[in-house]
Image 1 (cartoon, rainbow, N blue to C red):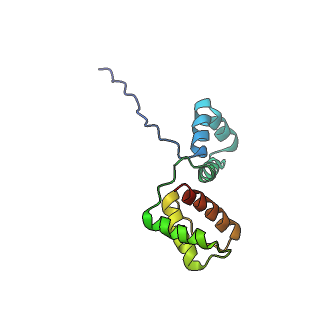
Image 2: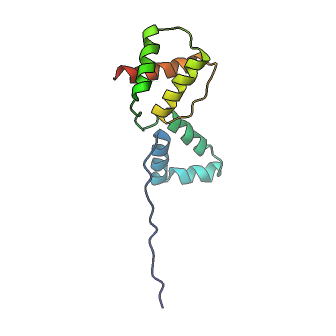
Image 3: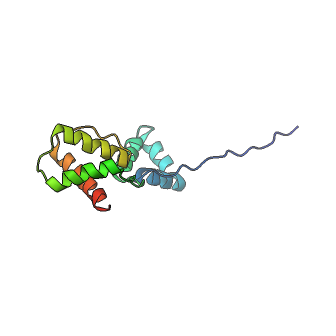
Length: 126
């Protein structure tokens, strides 16, 4: 009795960001196999993919809730140059929900500035 051939069904996962897109391209063209053959299994591809996904994510930000908009309105109205720890926590709570991230409080002023710029763009769209 002959065995019945079964096809593997693969579900195509939607790319979360640029890293996933590049991985799909390198798999489809055979580049990934060549790199694995030359560099071995630990070629750094997974780390690069994760980093590129973090930098260029395709997901759209979620909408602001009424209380979040009110808090941001007060924040951007006063235009303070410094951010208190309690304000940073509130900003990050809103930021993490909107962008589906898990950004932690930081002392890095350029990181806070980047978050503030993104949040101001979101705020201004309302």
